[in-house]
Amino acid sequence: MSPTIPTEDELEVALSEPTPEVIETLRRLRGDIMLLGVGGKMGLSLARMTRGASDAAGVPRRVLGVSRFSGGGEEAFQSHGVETIPCDLLIDEELARLPDVANIVFMTGKKFGSTEDMASTWAMNCLLPARVCARFRDSRIVAFSTGNVYGLTPVARGGSVETDPLDPVGEYAMSCLGRERVFEYFSRSLAILTALVRLNYACDLRYGVLVDLARQVWNEQPIDLTMGYFNTIWQGDANAQTLRAFDLVGSPPSVVNVTGPEVLHVRTVCEQFGERWHKPVRFVEAESETALLSNTRRAVELFGPPRVSAGQLVEWVADWVTRGGRSLGKPTHFESRTGRF
Image 1: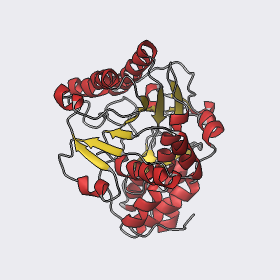
Image 2 (image 1 turned 135 degrees about the vertical axis):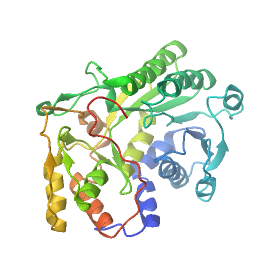
Image 3 (image 1 turned 120 degrees about the vertical axis):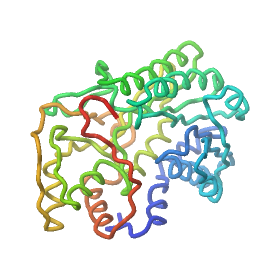
Image 4 (image 1 turned 90 degrees about the vertical axis):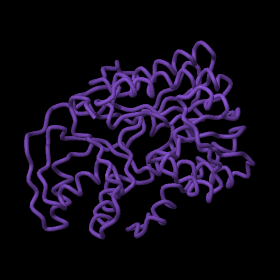
């Protein structure tokens, strides 16, 4: 792996580079692929990886990206061979006009700002999956979920596993569990082949938990330790595991945790940043015995370990912040223990 990622163009290339295993998955997969909600943070790199892996596999297929595109950005997809379809998925007529495709990546969801508008959050996270399942009942579906459905777990346990009872904290996490239950219902009742990807904190240098912490240290802001531990994964690895989840689809749905295998300590990570920059690090509050953590034993067994380790990510983030790399200005709010986002 490169010791640094100097530019955003190089970052986008690194995030979207398909692994040989992804290429093989998409070689076996039949039919076009449509990504719903592609306008979010992960959308462009995942769509580019899908296009690149399909081309490398020699499979002629359409890769389609669906979003409202209210802020523009369609050209970035189109320039890499991804067809774009402007669509408000909550409008029945617009959803009905989407083309039939064999494979769906469901990326749509609402998290930030959910506390201020819970009705919209529940509609996006629960109503829309029902409509998508009814519309694409003959498709394979890989749907994003979140580790928030587990709730807080003892740090000493090493993270929640896929078979653990679900105990979401706050309405956002409850709505995410609702999303999973809707997909499960339609997968069982309509035999829709489905996989649920419980993702915890992807990082792409412009956003992520490590970026939040690094910028707080850089700006000499106090670090809250009440959520003292976390998982994170390089977004390129999260993209790769998401596409490989097409190998897992079933009825009832298959579930897999997608995050880094390391349990990272907020205090230790911030002290590493502080030492690198010769900056003081000030902590407030104290670590709790519980945190939002996922165990990735199943993902490692299925996919192998991520290409990028947590240590490499720390180095990349530190270098990016040192050089004044751009931030998306979208904090993760990972420190919330009440489920309010």
